[in-house]
Image (cartoon, rainbow, N blue to C red; front, top):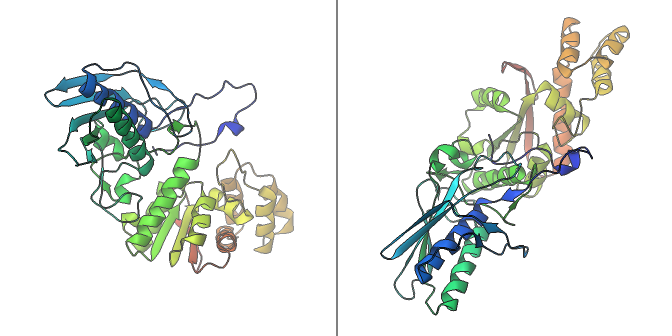
Length: 371
């Protein structure tokens, strides 16, 4: 599972119940920091605890964990991602604060289950806890505000922990991005909007940033794990070159347009790449369907008898169309690969990125490969 969601609310039917939004790990960490620091300054945990999000909204969070002792306080909040299929939904985000010597400023530490950045190209420097800039700013503002309110210097260390975060991180992009030891503390608005594609596309962009920063000259965008494995068998690329494109060919190609890498391989199943071949940049089944008329015309160009055109045109699935062509000794995968490559090159708009495309079947067998 990826730390992102699928279709947005616009794809819901008008009579469907509204999808429930949730809160980012950054918002939870900020609320936990406020609760812990309040206890350190006053001796009492606020429960629930309220914070102000970057957009001005002021949500409240119930505490799930409290602990304090000599010179420290900890508070934890269970993340509620709403109806978003987020891998961190239900995780407990814990902030532990303790004072630092005068003029030390505010420092962040990665506790249990929070990763550390080990590769360049991310918005956080190598060696730093994987706490993104907006959550850092939100926590800094909370500490500055509370310390000023109680007449204390804002010299505080904040340690963010997520029990079981290291195991959860294996289900995210973090290992490929060089974030070791756990999850990232993310969010720009504090709000998780159900079924938004932005988190996935954001991760693709960060993957490209890391690839460029580490000097890679070849990256791979695959529609799924089977096609990724097939392309890996051909190229033996490092994990940092694997971009988890999924359905978001447009998100990959448009970012590469302005942040190029010398070579891009796109690998995918026949149906997904048939959509790309037709010009679609979003390959999800709910937003783009395979154009059977298009496949029928490709088959005619490849030599299929006109009498069999209607069979492909009326096929129920792309795989059925492929099988009809195969039974008649017509290679339909090759023109799909070629047209998909053309779509990619057109989308790059002259950017110096060499593109090749690999079409695979459900077993991972390569059906076609462009030069």
